[in-house]
Length: 103
Image (tube, rainbow, N blue to C red):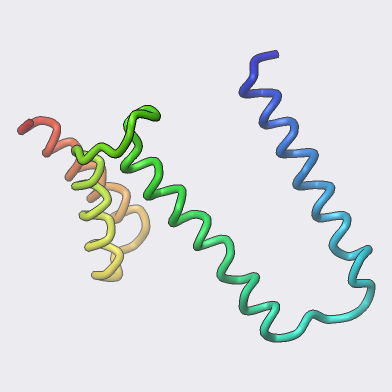
Protein backbone atom coordinates (compact mmCIF):
# COMPACT_ATOMS: atom_id res chain seq x y z
CA UNK A 1 0.00 0.00 0.00
CA UNK A 2 1.44 3.37 -0.98
CA UNK A 3 1.67 6.38 1.28
CA UNK A 4 -1.15 8.09 -0.57
CA UNK A 5 -3.57 5.27 0.17
CA UNK A 6 -2.52 5.24 3.82
CA UNK A 7 -3.31 8.95 4.05
CA UNK A 8 -6.68 8.45 2.32
CA UNK A 9 -7.55 5.61 4.70
CA UNK A 10 -6.53 7.66 7.74
CA UNK A 11 -8.58 10.64 6.59
CA UNK A 12 -11.57 8.38 5.96
CA UNK A 13 -11.39 6.87 9.44
CA UNK A 14 -10.87 10.31 10.97
CA UNK A 15 -13.82 11.81 9.11
CA UNK A 16 -16.14 8.97 10.07
CA UNK A 17 -14.97 9.22 13.67
CA UNK A 18 -15.60 12.96 13.81
CA UNK A 19 -19.05 12.51 12.31
CA UNK A 20 -19.87 9.89 14.94
CA UNK A 21 -18.54 11.96 17.87
CA UNK A 22 -20.57 15.06 16.97
CA UNK A 23 -24.05 13.72 17.79
CA UNK A 24 -22.74 11.89 20.85
CA UNK A 25 -21.31 15.07 22.38
CA UNK A 26 -24.23 17.44 21.76
CA UNK A 27 -27.03 14.94 22.32
CA UNK A 28 -30.37 16.39 21.30
CA UNK A 29 -29.35 20.01 21.77
CA UNK A 30 -29.27 22.37 18.82
CA UNK A 31 -26.16 24.57 18.44
CA UNK A 32 -26.57 28.33 18.70
CA UNK A 33 -27.16 30.35 15.55
CA UNK A 34 -23.69 31.88 15.89
CA UNK A 35 -22.07 28.43 16.00
CA UNK A 36 -24.01 27.36 12.90
CA UNK A 37 -22.92 30.52 11.04
CA UNK A 38 -19.26 29.95 11.94
CA UNK A 39 -19.48 26.30 10.90
CA UNK A 40 -20.86 27.27 7.52
CA UNK A 41 -17.82 29.48 6.90
CA UNK A 42 -15.21 26.83 7.69
CA UNK A 43 -15.43 24.76 4.49
CA UNK A 44 -15.23 27.71 2.06
CA UNK A 45 -12.30 29.17 4.00
CA UNK A 46 -10.38 25.89 3.90
CA UNK A 47 -11.16 25.44 0.20
CA UNK A 48 -9.99 28.98 -0.59
CA UNK A 49 -6.75 28.38 1.28
CA UNK A 50 -6.14 25.15 -0.61
CA UNK A 51 -6.81 26.84 -3.96
CA UNK A 52 -4.33 29.63 -3.21
CA UNK A 53 -1.72 27.19 -1.90
CA UNK A 54 -1.96 24.92 -4.94
CA UNK A 55 -1.98 27.88 -7.34
CA UNK A 56 1.11 29.57 -5.94
CA UNK A 57 3.12 26.54 -4.78
CA UNK A 58 6.44 25.81 -6.51
CA UNK A 59 7.03 22.22 -5.35
CA UNK A 60 7.97 23.36 -1.86
CA UNK A 61 10.53 25.88 -3.12
CA UNK A 62 8.55 29.07 -2.57
CA UNK A 63 5.95 31.02 -4.47
CA UNK A 64 5.49 30.70 -8.22
CA UNK A 65 3.70 33.23 -10.40
CA UNK A 66 2.93 31.31 -13.57
CA UNK A 67 0.06 30.35 -15.88
CA UNK A 68 -1.94 28.91 -12.98
CA UNK A 69 -2.36 32.41 -11.57
CA UNK A 70 -3.89 33.57 -14.88
CA UNK A 71 -6.31 30.63 -14.71
CA UNK A 72 -7.27 31.54 -11.15
CA UNK A 73 -7.84 35.15 -12.16
CA UNK A 74 -10.01 34.08 -15.07
CA UNK A 75 -11.99 31.78 -12.76
CA UNK A 76 -12.55 34.61 -10.28
CA UNK A 77 -13.75 36.86 -13.11
CA UNK A 78 -16.13 34.16 -14.36
CA UNK A 79 -17.49 33.64 -10.84
CA UNK A 80 -17.96 37.40 -10.45
CA UNK A 81 -19.92 37.34 -13.72
CA UNK A 82 -22.16 34.63 -12.20
CA UNK A 83 -21.18 32.02 -14.79
CA UNK A 84 -22.17 28.38 -14.18
CA UNK A 85 -19.46 26.26 -12.55
CA UNK A 86 -18.78 24.30 -15.75
CA UNK A 87 -18.14 27.57 -17.58
CA UNK A 88 -15.88 28.75 -14.74
CA UNK A 89 -13.75 25.60 -15.03
CA UNK A 90 -13.57 25.86 -18.83
CA UNK A 91 -12.63 29.55 -18.73
CA UNK A 92 -9.90 28.87 -16.16
CA UNK A 93 -8.53 25.96 -18.19
CA UNK A 94 -8.58 28.00 -21.39
CA UNK A 95 -6.81 30.96 -19.76
CA UNK A 96 -4.14 28.71 -18.26
CA UNK A 97 -3.61 26.92 -21.58
CA UNK A 98 -3.40 30.22 -23.47
CA UNK A 99 -0.76 31.65 -21.11
CA UNK A 100 1.27 28.43 -21.28
CA UNK A 101 1.05 28.43 -25.09
CA UNK A 102 2.22 32.05 -25.29
CA UNK A 103 4.97 31.66 -22.68
